[in-house]
Each structure stands twice: as C-alpha cells, then as structure tokens.
Image (cartoon, rainbow over all chains, first blue to last red; front, side):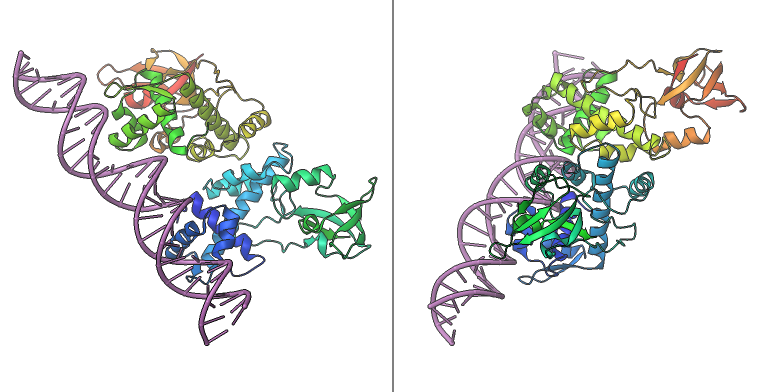
Length: 219
Length: 219
DNA sequence: TATTTTTTTTAGATTTGCCTAAATTATAAT
DNA sequence: ATTATAATTTAGGCAAATCTAAAAAAAATA
C-alpha cells in the first residue's frame, strides 16, 4: 500500500499523541496538525477505510497494528534523515526538523536501509530520540523530563519535547544542548520553576514549561 | 515562490524537450509526462500565470528566464541526489533515477548546497550528465551519440539518453556502462546498426535505436 | 435533571491536478 | 482552395484535502 503525504502526516501525528494519551481526540489532532476539526474528521474516515486505525465517531481514534507499523516506519525515516543532516551535512541539530519532515516522505525502503547502513545503524537521532529498526522495534527511551527530577539529582540532556524553533532557539541561548550535564539545585513550589547549574556557567532558572520539554538521563 | 511537485515536473519536462527542440508542443509534453493533452493545457495556463514560460494557445510553449532558472535548479537537485545514491549509498547507477525523482522535490536550498559540498562538488552525475552549479551554469556536455561516430573511432561511454529501465537493463546485459571503452568496427547502411568491440568481449551489434541512446567522448 | 457549553460531525464549497467528450484551430492532402 | 486529419483547447466532472457554517452529540454545570 502507498500513502499520500497528508495521510502519512496524520498517522505520524496520531502516533505522537498516542504516546501520552492512548485515545486521541479530533481536537487534539486539529491542534497538532494546524487544520480545522472538520478536516480531521474527513481524513479519519478515509484512514479507517484504509484499515490503519480504529475510529468511532465522537469517541476518538487509535492506531491499529498496521497503523503503528506505518507510523514507526515514518518515524524511522525522519530520524535517520535527521541523523544524516547533522552527522554528514553538518547542520545544527535544531535546524534539521523541517527538512526531515520533507525527506521522510520519500518512499523507497531500499533507500532507507542503505542510508541506515551508510550511517552505521545509529540508535538515536540528534535530539536524543531513539530510531526504530526496520521492523519497528525501538530501544525504550530512558528519557525523563527534567521537570520530574528532584533536587541534587544530576543528569545529561538527551532530547527535547518538541522541535519548535522557539524552544530550540531558547535552549541555544541558555547554552543547553544534547550532552549537556546539569544538576538540579532548587525547586520552587510556587511556580514549579527550577534552578539548575551547568559546569562553568552561573545558576539559571528554568520555567516549568521549559523544564517539561527538556529530556535527560540520570548520572 | 514555491512550486508544487506537479509544477516542478512540468518545468523539468519542458526544459528537457527544449534541449532538442526549442518550441515544445502540448502533445510532446503529454507523451513525456504520461498525461492527457487536456491536462497539459490546464497546467500550461497555470504556469503562464506564474510567469515561468511563454505560452500561446495552439503555438506551443517555451521557458522564460525564470522558468529556465527553476528547471536548472531541479536538474541540479536531481543529479546531486543521483551522485549521492551511487557514490555514498552504493546503488547501481541504473537504479537511482526513480528515487532521485522524489528527492529532487525536497525544497531546502541550504540542503542542496551542503549536499554539494559533502559530495565534493561533483561535475557530473552517474549517467555522465553535467550538474549545474547553484546559479544554473553547467559545463557544456561533450557527449556525442554513439550513432554519430565513424568506423575505427574509439570512445568512452559517458552517459545514456534516457533512464527507462528497459534501456538500462539492456546495457547491463551487454556489459556496457559508464567508463566502458569501445571501438566502432563497422556501420551497416541498410539498418544503421553498428558493430562494436570492447576489450575482452566478442564483437556485438547495436541497433540504431540503442546507439542513439548511448553517449560517449572520443579518445 | 434540565440546560448550557464544548466537541464533533455533516453539508456544501474551493483548489489542484487530473480525466473524457466535444468543439475548435492548424496542418496536410487532394 | 477545399476538405480531411491531426493537434489543441474548452466544457464539464471527479478525487484529495482543505475550508466555513450549521447541526448533532457529548460533557459540564446549574
């Protein structure tokens, strides 16, 4: 089966939303994809026809096995291209998302297998997100949100919550990137902000919003 | 300005046909693009609106400066990706055309400049066709058709006339590829076929059709 | 529980890119 | 110079993917 770019983008968006909330609503999708809810309803009916998901009017949507397989394939393509762009073409890690959004829709499977081989079978993309293998298996990411950590804990940044240029620009300015080591110094209950310390840097404060969008592994 | 995949494919096809025949007809385009003439007329009207070409109803079409610039940009993207697929991903040179047809529509200019740099600024793609630079300049190909050579002349294969799998498959079977050295042994006036000799190979006969689709440089 | 608000779906329209069938124009042949 | 043929365009339609406005269903609230 072959799918349009729009269809692939819907499947990918449903998959992403499913990660935190197994039943996805029309409104969530419309926000994620920047379209109107009516358009989402249309597309869900078409994707149900194509047997990629379970959809009951008014009761949200859930990918079936076929849909998940397709989603993981698109995610694989996206993350491999991101790795290529940073590793080989020397793009900044915060500049590659938009380009990979286009590259991920190039349909040749052989292309992806050869690209994977050329890149040395990388396990994670430049944002720290794991790359599924060709059968859709993926190392369970041991990402935590920075926001979940307790005072005194130390961690290494491994990824970010979304690819918006606003977030990425902000991280760059605060000198936070993949691989950055940091320690939680203090949590403020009033607004859930955090104070963190990085080597050779002054103490800085991160808002709850920002901390929730920075992923780390403990050390 | 941003163009759809269909629009880009029309511009590229017009450019290709213009090479041999400066005024391109609706029927030629419909054959090249595998669509109906009526669809071509539709699209030509839209591309004229967008000021990419000169089009007078019933009198064919010609790219203007803007259209040529776009065409050369698409050709550049296509040929760089072909080079990448063969050189880095180790695809066979006759398997890359279809994939490059998709990759060429990825729109980032920075991507292409970085890819060009990564590949070492190649001058020609794996079929021997020259790669335009970022401002559309291109080494005038010193390709000759094998069909134009005289008896006793020696040449090296540098490219092929089209990317149809029929042609490429046939060349592979006859052990003719880029870089192959050969000598014209005899021309038959009756059917314009050629007898050629390659090192360590028996004499073989090529039809006029085939010879016209093999490009070479003299040695 | 009845009513209001929010969410979702339906109905009808639009754009792109294609199609078929019919009409028109240009070209070739008598 | 007419007529026949071939090429091209016009007219009207269709599917994909979107939209707005209105209707329907579900959830929240009084």
